Length: 245
Image 1 (cartoon, helix red, strand yellow):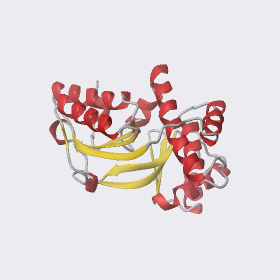
Image 2: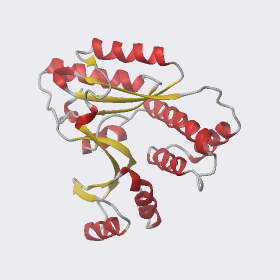
Image 3: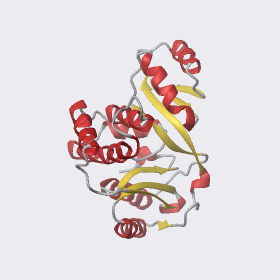
Image 4: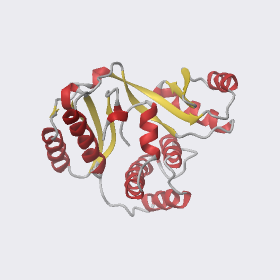
């Protein structure tokens, strides 16, 4: 679940192994548990839950799994108390990295984050050290191969999207975070299905990595972060993510 709103990210998501997909299901389940506790189990009255159900479906989480997680959270089956923490730092050669976590043990997670960054040529920074280089945007990505681009653009602006672009038969629609849910739901009602749909940290500038060691270290850093159960999302400003091993 790493990256930023670039086409290579979607490609990497599609190529996940079964084990990686299972981990993604677990992470999304944790998010759903938190929002059900906060806002209830009825998606009609819980906008955050509606967004997470859409995110789960975009990641191919089976409907039965989603229903089971919601019922478990509503019934108090998950006793863990999770807190949101955002870590910021630099990967190899100054790649800016934001890591969003949901954890029931702040000390464990902080120690793990520091270890990963140190081990692979980066350094964990203070809050705000890289987030100023990113802007939060609602990002919806869909397969545009068989879509009428003009009709899609018309529909996007009809439901309040901010911008739309198409590249390599993939459409990316951006919104302000506050209007993300309304835009997503509006497009769903028009029959569109998404490869990815969530609020993301989109970088304002990008860094291209060169050198086998730098690329290897960045790839291993992303892999270690993705493997950590406490990590929900990883955002970075690496330009050539497709070159990672």
